[in-house]
Length: 304
Image 1: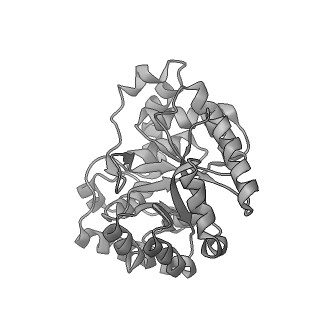
Image 2: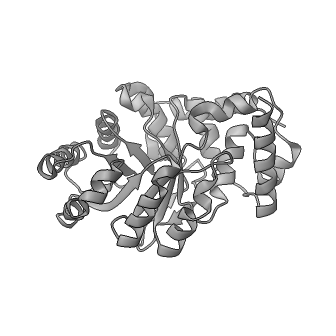
């Protein structure tokens, strides 16, 4: 089977083509487009692989950020998680590329006060040309619990089209499910992978049943996953669901859960970005295979 290193070497020609100075539209039509899944309660769809807030975005590395976003859009990607300085890096490139209608941006705010929060949101709006934020996200579960009307007001005032909460620890699941029950959020972002399956017990089924869109973070456990599979051969049976690297092995497991709308990948490496995006194409594992995948990865983890 092909390793991640071998796979990304094979994609070198694709990367070189994407890096060439040609308009996005001229090469986007040459690329297969990522499958999409509907955002519940809307007439919108989201491509199933998204981008996390890459260090390239955060550091303001415009050349690398342009390359990552061009690759992403050429594959049909849309959802990008943005926070801190990365919010403005992504929006600058979005406006340069005239891609306001191509990207769907999740935006974190840091202000807790309602007025300063609104000012922060408007600053981000101005950076993207004045339109409402696609998705306003908060990690502050305590603040959302204490002041839910503040978040509703920002949406009602037209500052954002959707509201969401994002966490990556099961200790927050009960609060997140409470937000769903109260109708506060349209999106939840949560950790889920072969080594973190707690969300599939209650939170993911509840989101699916209630029509809440689901974004997945930590597909690689912040890199820990790759230390587990390093030097290991991808099993031959991965070919049964069109899997060609260990990164795709994790992403396809996640995408096979019907509650998931989009899984977020975070990299500053264009070759890795291509590998990650290609996980969105081809077959996905069935439930029997997913159990086999979990056993394999957990056995490997226990060997460390």
